[in-house]
Length: 365
Ligand SMILES: *Cc1c(COP(=O)(O)O)cnc(C)c1O
Image 1 (tube, protein in one colour):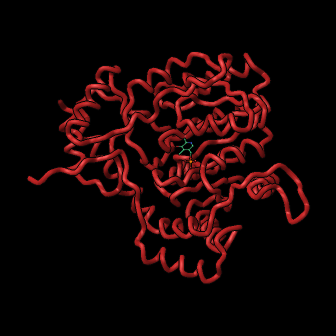
Image 2 (cartoon, protein in one colour):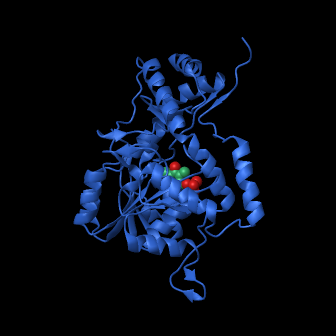
């Protein structure tokens, strides 16, 4: 048998180059590289149709999209509740607009923001102005419960849907929940534009505010509101148009690999987060929780020795970050425990049965 290649947690999908280069030629001919050009507008229409959501606003990355969403929801400088079990950008987007983070622990079964604990947080701190839950791994938060709690407390609801592209809950895209949702199109995500992201909202006033704030907050000489540069370039949109073609197939392949993993790992003492009933999961990641930290560490070493490189998504729990103000720290034992025990196994559309068997063999040790 030949030398086996190293396996990583994901592999960035690339479109066929010829289609992309053809689009680039058109961009060079028009010399319009930026500012809401034809590729950006075409990709916005195509994504709206593909996801069956109100036409998204494309952004230069998911973090800017989150900042725009929270800022246009009026949350700058306010208290915002969020999950500590997520990628750091959820938190950093809020900190860059001066929010005070209120960490609310997760549900141990779903690994997403616990509605029960969110209720407690509002009871303790009625001045929480907004909530930013995350559809972690593309799994759905309890959107019905969280939506009801926010409505009851008059809080704004902004979803970090960075990982949720292609997931549907009760037949509706997960990008279509809350007042506004932000998605990431970074190269490591299921659908990508190298760097990029988008915003989805049904609220016309919100859409208008986002549109304005995405491009510096002015129209010509008329300056209306605080803005930022959140625009996507034509080159990135051109890449996205080519990537969109293969995305349904990529999701189907990841679902198949998921099923293979489930079967191959069935007899190991691993716990997986529980999808909400009614969710059609994009199967973007394959997270597993080991019984304890030592088991996780042992598995990581055995996998690495066999050339397999999983990732500790998501470690550490964000409520433990060193640069938080002391008054923002509070224990979130469920998230901290999950962060110590979790690994995301390699998962992408180019894997096959033998790759899954190889990971399973190493884990059996
Ligand atoms: C990827 C990601 C982001 C950041 O998106 P970028 O496009 O990389 O800025 C934010 N939140 C979560 C949960 C993510 O996974």
